[in-house]
Image 1 (cartoon, rainbow over the protein chains, first blue to last red):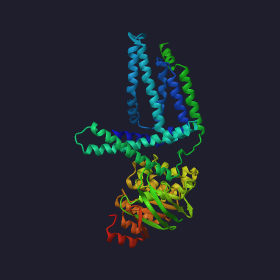
Image 2: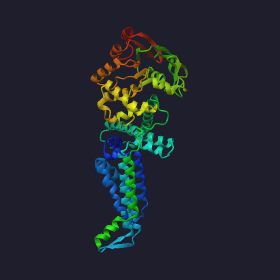
Image 3: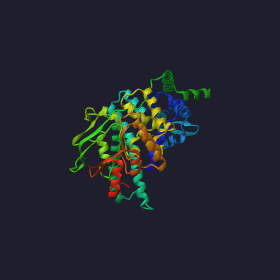
Image 4: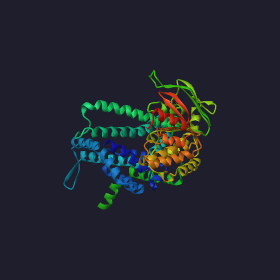
Length: 265
Length: 233
């Protein structure tokens, strides 16, 4: 499991290193549009399902544009959905008044809330995953610094991300060694857990120290932004303008209702 | 460029015992010196001290007549390249390209220059095909060469290598040996492999319990070591 988690981080990095039209968009353009998308989705009232639905446009367009496989992203999406499901079920139980009837089926405010929560989670998680899968993490941190996030905070992001995989690899190696000497045992026994975790901390500390020394030896002085300092091109500006226009249109014009009324007429 | 260790004494934090005691020697410009000794003799500590990562309690490291101090450390590190024992410690960026560019970018080199130097170094090491590969997907030999590329791109005058042949199969060892043989840099190579040391280096320094136990021509040192059955394989 730990090895899978570490491989998961690496697989996202592998995806970010691919080449596609979306990968080639400037990281700042992707960051800004993702933030705007998140803000727009979150700003919808809790029972406005019809307004939210058209926001499916982003995952639907971005995935083919990015040429990233669906599986690694949907797997991560499903990891987040149970939390949304808990919140959604709470709404189902608490708001039982009927909002309208669909044919002969009464639709409660709770049902609307539930659908809205699930849609929002789906859109938000997918938007962030698309961003991470098309932009190297170091470049994202670089852009955050450009947006005025203090360097020390950016450095924390960067280092946490780097050391997370170090920690997972150490834990994975230790767990393998443990399992090989305890056949039939599933996981680490409680009585061994203390020394297992203690060793893990010490080993990770050592590894992290070595990584840090290697960085120091190559001139690291506390701040490093990988990026190739690409300047945004005309295409990036058009991407932002187009994206924000669509976003504003969908936020203030209920496309679903409009299409519904057209169909009804 | 001459590298000199002058009476180095090194202790780890919270420890009374010295890991290195009164270590003194000089490596002349272009010289290749093997650093030999048992596990725990202080080889890695010595290399880290020479690279300015560990600070000696007393004594100093002198590079071409200039004492390495905290104030000039950043500039000095550009001149001293250190290849770590475990390449996984050294390859911390996601792709080989990003990792090799880490050093020059830290020193503010222009991207065009980095690309030019990178292509030169990759060609020299025969790893142009690894440029855009993910670092975690490389084999042991490839990782070692990628780590070496990350150091060579800085164009250091002095190379410190901590057991560069560990984790390598025979073919990768041969290849690395051939590459190291052609490098013009002043080199200090910590190794347990006496045969490789003899082929690559002209001189050897033997560390024992944190002190310089022997220092002289490689042939004489290895003969002496073999007869005394000290150290190594």
